[in-house]
Length: 324
Image 1: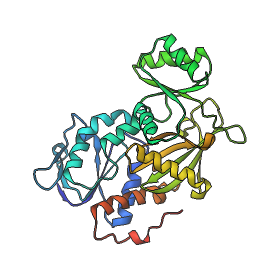
Image 2: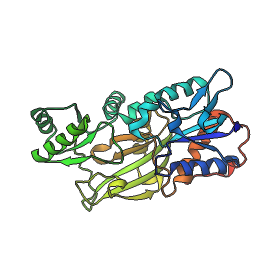
Image 3: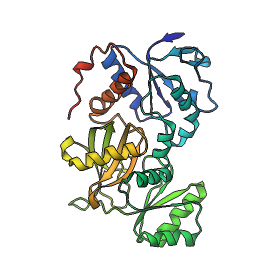
C-alpha cells in the first residue's frame, strides 16, 4: 500500500487514554479527509519503522506494507517512560522538514524529566515550590532534605505518569517508606515543599491550563477531597472545565511563560494561585478525550500543524471556533 500526502497521526497504540481518536476526528473535521493513524512504537529504537529523507520525506513500515509521504505529522500520546526511545526519530523528523508541531526531543525531555523541569523553571524565573532531587539517598540524606523543606512535602518520581507513586509525606515513617519504594524500583525522585493549595472547603485543588503559543485554550480545575492524595483525575480528583476568564490574566501569562520555559509551543500546565501563583509541571501531551477537549484543544492544535504546513485548502477551518 502506498499513501501520498495525508496527515499522519502517530501515537503509541498501547495507550488507552483515547487522544489519538480525538485527533483523528479533528483531522477529518478540518480537512474532510481521514488521516493515516500509525503506531508510534514502529519508530521507537528497535522498531521496524523508518523515516527516509533521501528524497521526499517518507515514512515506511515494511512489516505493515506502509509507505507514506506525510503532508503533516501529528505526534501525541507517547508515554513518558518511553520518550527516550523516540528521540532518534524526532531528530530525523526535525531534519526532514515535515511539519510537526511541538515534537522537539529536548523540549520533551525538559518537561518529562522533573529534574530538568525544575532547572528550566529556575532559569526562566517561573515560580515553583522548592524541590530537591534525590538519587538513591541514604536514610540520613533523605531525612536532611525532608527537614530542609519543612517536614511537609510531596515525593514523586523524576519521570512519572498519572500521579502514580506520588506521596504526601509529613512523618519520618512515611518518608522512609517512600524512599524504600523508589530504591526498589531504582527511581530518582523529588521532594517538593507542600504548596498548601486548599480551597475554601479545605480540599486540594489545582488548575490544568492548556497553552498553544501565546493562547490559553482550556482551563480546568481539579479538586481532591483527600488532602494526602495527588490532585490528579487518575487518583480520584474531580475535574471541572471553567471559562477561560475564571483565572486571572496573570495566571494565563504564567502558564504561557512556563510552557515556553521548557521549549514547548504547546502543553498542559499544572499550577495553583497560592503564594502568588506556583507552577508544578508542564505536560507534553494533555489528555484530549475530556469534556470540550475536541473543540477547545484538538482542533486548534491540528490547525497549528496545518498553519506550519502552509496548507492551501482548509475547507472547514473557517467554521471552527473554539469556545473562549
